[in-house]
Amino acid sequence: MHRTLLLAALSLACAHRAVAPPVPSLEHAWTVVPVGDMPVAPSPSATLEFHVSGGTATGFTGCNRFRAPFAVDELHGLKLGPILTTRRGCPPGMTDRAFLAALEQTTHYRLDDGALILLGAAGEELLRMRRAD
Image (tube, rainbow, N blue to C red; front, side, top):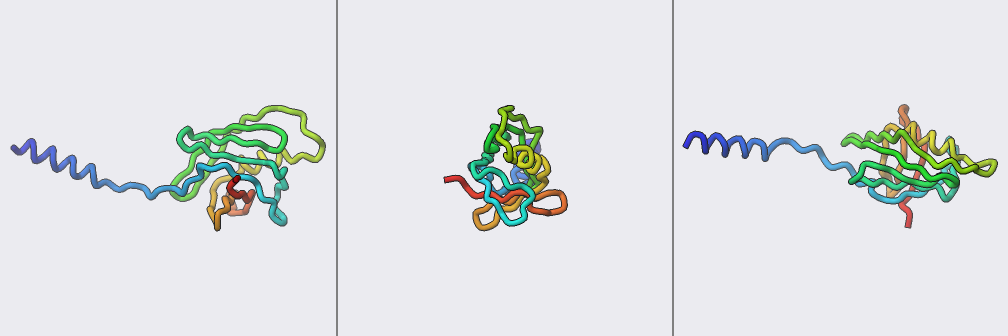
């Protein structure tokens, strides 16, 4: 009898443990929106897509395709990388490397009025994206 009560109490205690609040979903395809003095002015066809179940992100820089593991936390921390890319020769003026560098420098994100904003270590806006249609 005591063993049954003990097992029931343990089961109940485990069922009531604290659960972290859910992280807002990033599981979408996003396109870059150029904004003012943003350090990166990527191709308008640059994309980023999060595959949450697999923990990978894929995308297109406007010239090359890329893939990277990513991790998020409940405080909106976001870490991408290492980033693997194709190695096509890009036309002069492409901002391939700057776009990829901004992704690698991302430490946090914010969702603001439907936009995904990628932030650097000092809280600066690195990229602004909107959901792809």
